[in-house]
Image (cartoon, rainbow, N blue to C red; front, side, top):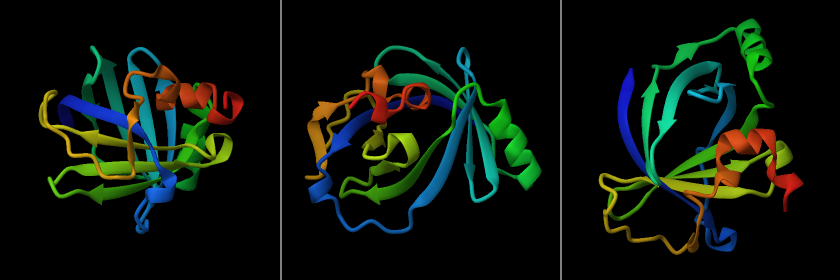
Length: 160
């Protein structure tokens, strides 16, 4: 199990400046509980479950299980247990010159049109060098509308 404190920042992007994207991973993400937040992610018939607790700003506690193979029946059951409609997105991982991994999410379904990127940092005051395609003027780390749980309850297409 993966456990620890995570420091993450999230931004909108300049879609016209994005590099060529390849090797994306399709993710179906749903929630079993809001407090504590219990999330499942299904990728290629494998599931990971995470328990999260948010602190202040960019810090949160996260405990994540290792991936486990699922049958179609188990996937359907898990989707049926979700407390809100699961979100679907394709995730691309882009490494920068600093060695940071930027996780770019291109949303589908009712969140189509939304593209976000987040980066996990080694420290809250880590000096980030932003790729040109990251819209650093539109940091959404603390904007709850862009939280994946909230996107599952009130999709992007309902508020743009």
